Image: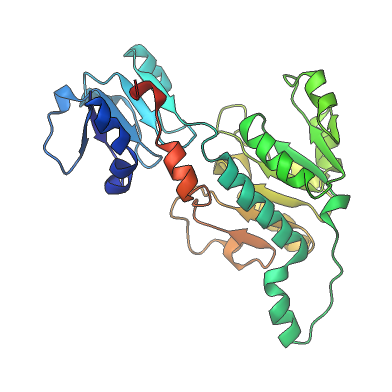
Length: 295
């Protein structure tokens, strides 16, 4: 097959796709001479929209390979109409995302990176809580849920709340400290840590908007490593400004790169990063492996 890498970092992607050359596949970047009408596979991350306009340029495409997870920039209906298969690597970055999620939660709870500055300025004003006393809601399920759950369980987290009617009862019973909650509002009222790992779908867009913030306690830690459209930015800023013991970790933005003037960058109880925390050497290798092409 002839494979075209549509990427901002084509050399890195091509390097990770080197295993495909053993299968006699030919790999091109936009800088290489290639014939669009002969391309059968296109490889993308998240910066390029796969829509009708793009697909019209490559009429023989059979597969769209999505490095990492999330399909909100791919026109699924258009691909289905053209009988194009979408191939992604869900779960490939679960370990790296779970690692940084745990680290961010601990930092927001104990603020240890700033303790040196407090010491120099002779400020010792806070008493902190232990993670073992916290109730956690990991929003989503399967791959990432399991990884974050395992790490937090190692800290003897008090309780994990589950709000998903598709989760079987025997699963909940077989996992330590898990409890099913029927009413979503009850979760917002009772959890201390909320970790978002969801795709941006119609069912998740605006999921955490206005009324939900009113239900929160004053010390909730919110981590979002999924997609931006899930949380209302203005309400999040208000919540963090009004509650100094609350905290947020954000690795995703409405616009990427984000607006450098956003108030979130100025808040002492908010940690931000430029959508990079899935990027480890191990995850990169897993995210570029497409089994359907390795045959």
